[in-house]
Length: 474
Image (cartoon, rainbow, N blue to C red; front, side):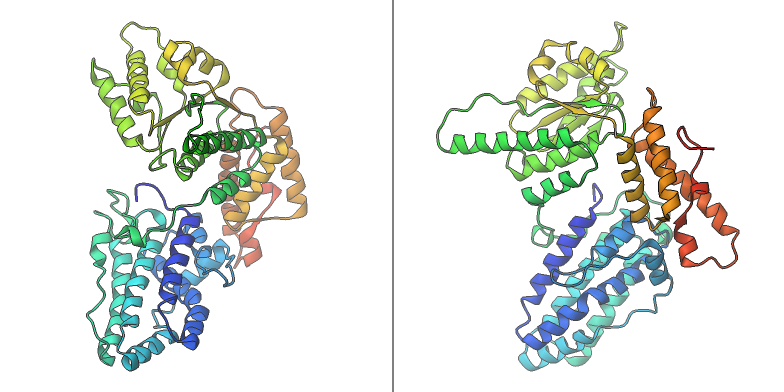
């Protein structure tokens, strides 16, 4: 996987794969039994995969809660519930419906059970990649499970050979059990386009945009831009004239205000409406474009452009390209190379430049070509105290921590004071993340001193766990 697969994408891939297999089952009773058992069985197997490496994180919880089929109950496990399921995993047991599949195959001369082994194997490899790698230990577990199911098929005389998926192909080079020796990210366990998760729809992407905390003006601007592009495409189909339109954007705002997140969503939105062929986001800063030798900057910038073709090139702190006054600086060379690439690839490349408002205005005036190509501005305002608290609540919920009423009041007051005391070093959501991580560390020190802490104590974050930060009452 070049980039992490989101929990939403995991759910889609799982739901589509299971739905496709379910449609192959002709017997209504068997189909019903399969539907009722499959989610619980696959979640148990996911716990077995993750037991091979340990080191559970928030994404494992998100993946676990993404394992459900449409129409079945949606899980809402917390971190500690998953940790218990992984620690207490009893070992692999074939599900009841699998023996029923075998009996059906023997009676009808079909191979549904063997086809299920392939589907099952690919799903487990997908779960194994929750931490962006597939270790030898995880692959070994998947292989043992697939072998156990295939052996049942062999014993029953089901036609066909063992599973066709070659599991070693999915192991990340240099990664052993425990995630040690990582040398490269894991491959996406999807051997062909037919097995890949469907692309998110325009409606789903807009829903993700709406779920972001705050940013109301940015959300409205994004939707207006998407509507403009959609209508422009409709006018082109009808042979109507369309005015020139630049899709390149300027994001203005302080750090931690969601600029990269919105850029990633915009890349997917542009892809969903047919403007971009791929919809990926490539994020760089000055160091990713500028080199220290004559001629090397152009090559470095061209390399970044090539990676971004079909998607969005997001340049954070873009003003740094024009902020060096020395005659030997190569920032201007990067700008010139970038402008040429924007012209050469104007039909399949979008560039978004981002940074503080003042320095970005200076940057855009540094070259006439920049002003002409970047004429749409999105302003990212600082999060309010209430929004900072909402972000903190979201981090707690996603990671299995709970706040009581008094702690909530303390947090609300502290984040409001943090907002009101903000200065040029204010980090918005980045500050919230730092505060959350420090609170978790302090909570761990407190809970570790308890004798046999309860589940509630393991989950509870108290006001005393909050680190000292501007705004927190002593």
